[in-house]
Length: 636
Image (tube, rainbow, N blue to C red; front, top):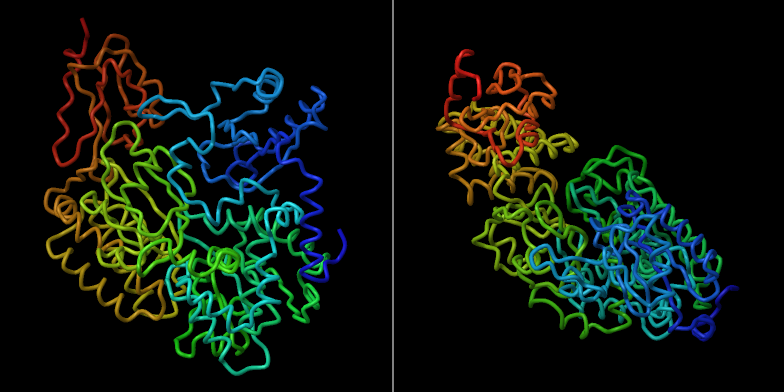
């Protein structure tokens, strides 16, 4: 493929690629995102290539390593097109059977199909799996169809048509008008209207302007941006190019956290391929528009996800927030007008330009348009990345897509918005998921983290954990954030350790409101959300910890104890043999007891005790029964 010098040549190249591809030709796709890498996709890929050669099918069957399919807990995932047959948790030793059954005998490998955990029903096709069929994958959908390192794959599915349209059929003002008309709001957390943000940067005076991709997502359990950058870096670059043209920028940066090596590698390939073929650099597509982009690897500081801290880091300074105004749109990188959006926001731009503002704004709610990608994790059967229309209910995400809570446990809460988000109880599960509705109940959408919790989760300890995370990640520049979070954490730690006292709840509320109102940046302003939301919806748990020295969820180590019920113990010795602290005394056909001084409360004894006996109890808020005397421990 040579340099592409015009929209006509772009279309000619695309048609040429399609003419060489038989859409009905069998194709094996293998998810090769980070999660599937971790579960062995590299070895599966090698096995596929070897088996295709062994069966003489290399010319008859295509093989494509794609980006993240989203259903991460079920990886490695293999999908066979054009049928859409989906195999889950594939191992290298399964490939021979897949090749022989699917291609030779035209049968499916039944044991590798998805099995619904509640009904036991199996799904052969990808689009029949509840996790997928209840989504609307407009942005994430291309991940499963293309090799993220292949420009040809991206062009084949319509890549860079939006850029050509913007450069040759629209003025910069029209591009901004289309983004404003789509009512796209930033997907990084703040939800500010993207078109308005672009307009500020375009109208700001300056001979040099910058556009930046913020790929520094640091929320625990969140990896939406990583998977987009790994699986389809070309669409992020295309969105960035369109934004640069609209704003009047000639230079851009992708700020990506150090922990994302695969995203950096795939992005590097995409940049080189785009430069090689005239889709990045000088005189792009023969339009006279010049744009270059550089990748900057951050050191993994959570605070650098905040815009002004990110800019400080890019300039080689400590990542600390700056007071606003001035905003980056008027005075950003090196004092020049700068526009920053996160990965998902940029990835929506080609869709809006191709499909139009009316198409995009028809999806979602009045104040939140389009789709949103969430990282659905925690105590839920189907974990992974989900893309849904704005306005879907939390209940539909947790139960229709997520498959509900595993092991028959009861749903307790879902935390949205990352460590600065709120914990939402079951009573609010029917709320619509959009920027404004979540704010009304003390939560937030954030960048898209969504953690499901069951009855065994202590919400007091969850709030403490997020405060601990935010205390570690606070840059320490402003006193309200640095000291406010630290002091709240001290009180929360005391409560979970059984040292809480009357007045702690009121003290927490006062400190939370003070921190929220006085902190310099969004990290400090939103840090109290987990505390305030759990106090609002789960106050009785705080009271139990403080007044009764009891953890209702039996989770806080300092407030629980393990006890072997004499009447149920059969003296099998299973707990005795497996206790890592050697805290269990007993012998054959003798009732076992736990030495409370030695017990580390790891829970191994409960796991080790045979289900038929169920002799080990976890207790809280009540005295541990005295061990029975030695002479009474014999079992008849």
